[in-house]
Amino acid sequence: MKKIAIMTTGGDCSGLNTVINRVVLGAKIRGWQTFGIIDGTDGLCSKPINIIEMKPNTVPIENARLAGSFLHNGHACMLNFEKAVQTGKIKEFNKTLRDALAKLKLDALVLVGGNGSFSLAWLNREIYHDLSLVCIPKTIDFDIPLTDCTIGFDTAVEQLTKYCDQILLTARSHHRWFVVQTMGRDCGRLALHAGIAVGADAILVPEIKFDVDELIQHIKSVDRDYGIIMVSEGITLRGHSGRPADMISRKLTAAGITNRTAFPDYIQRAGDTVAGDRILATKMATCALDAIENNETYVMTALRGRECVTVPLSEFYATGDVRADPNIPAIKTANAYIEPDDPLLHVAADLNTYIGTRE
Image (cartoon, rainbow, N blue to C red; front, side):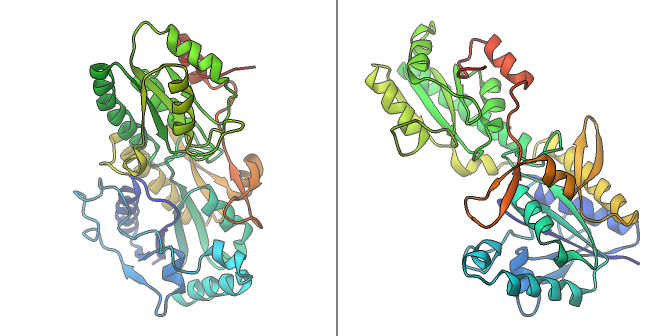
């Protein structure tokens, strides 16, 4: 009988409880024993190790749709990879994790995380030397290379779209524009997808240069005096500082365009998990368990078309746009961004949505 564990790391999102539920159910069918590591690496560093045995009713089916993670994602005050690097304790930290996993005598670990967690897992792969490491991608940013989608993204798009639908009604009533700032870090996919869904008249993303004067002229040319301007949190405006939505809002105000800013913030990470994310979580859970059965290790589950496959973490890291992590200067992270030939960019342009200057 195999003994496996699952843990969630990084930022939370909808779909985490679904994948936990599906991994536990799939493992039970295979006759395996499943444990949940509480608070990610914090749980492995705790004495005793913070771990619980998972049963099908630990995260019952009616709770699997809920946002957040039953296993939690860690405490800000605890020693983690970021603080370990900053304080020069990375070797000590890695040894603590390696010793904890050895003590648990696991056959496999399912790591549900984002591109930062996966990059760290690959760069510190000696930690997982004695077990099968299978990673499942989750992030509302959808900035992980080699997969057609990530768990949590569809629900975040839905949450943001619903938010903008309501804001649009107020915009119409008061003849004003709303500059809505989305999450996504340096990747604009969340803003692009939700912007198209809500019918935004402008979508500003980090990957595409834009001109404020062009934006202003475009908004003035729209045949109504209200609407949504979707702004990704990763955009910059030369000579200005502050929150991106505020910067754009000030420019609009100066041009005589009545507007307000809106910050949906963490509701983008919340909300009942939509069907698309539930299906994706189930596919990826099954793929991860199959990988463990096949003795695969250092792999990531990935959606390719309608099929879920595994790809080596080495390929994930090499294929991504590897850049220095802003929080861990000594570490580089593999990122994915909106590609210049993304079909949604053409769709946005065809809707007369201002998306900046495309080459």
